[in-house]
Length: 247
Figure 1 (cartoon, rainbow, N blue to C red):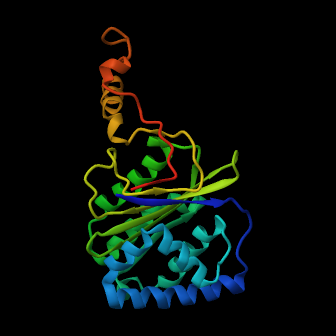
Figure 2: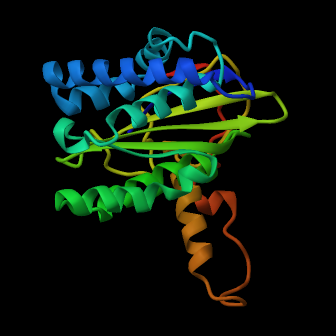
Figure 3: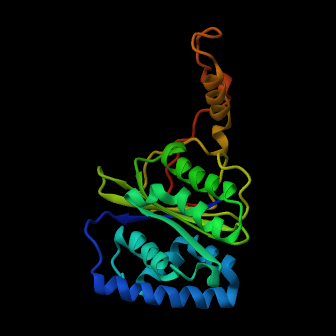
């Protein structure tokens, strides 16, 4: 399920190298401590909490209320566990920009070394990204996607989109626990400082629209009567709710 989201000012630039190296070392120590105490699943649960994640970024030293906290914190963790994945039982794939598109191949590479089956993990990564970029149309374009998982196929996603119009970034958190349907109410919470209309095709009340969309997509060109299903036939209109916090 998606466990929450956070709204952050959109800033450009990069963290100083000296700061990032210190963040990476501390991120590794914190990750190891949490895993020793709560297991890899406990760490994934914490990364899926937008408030815990924000606090972690501040503790690591990136204490700006900025979009950069997401990318820098995830990058620091990925750097920290590099070469220690099998020891910790934690694997991190993806990143910012072009690196985010390497997520599937990085998942496969990790699974090949551990003998795990990558197909379900690759699907989860792609589905989470597709939902937050296409099924939830809130004006934010994804540019950062990190997929964390363990040997037991538990996983978490931390991804972020940007809006040039509002100069804001929005971070989305996902956790594998309880996922039954990626396209029907996968979110456990949505928390954001900004309010606005959102075309939410994964809302429960959009079930009729989802069925009508699938039906229209299956029709051959020029097939049937050529007419799209009406809202009445669909059963409901797509949800356009925009909330500051929903659980």
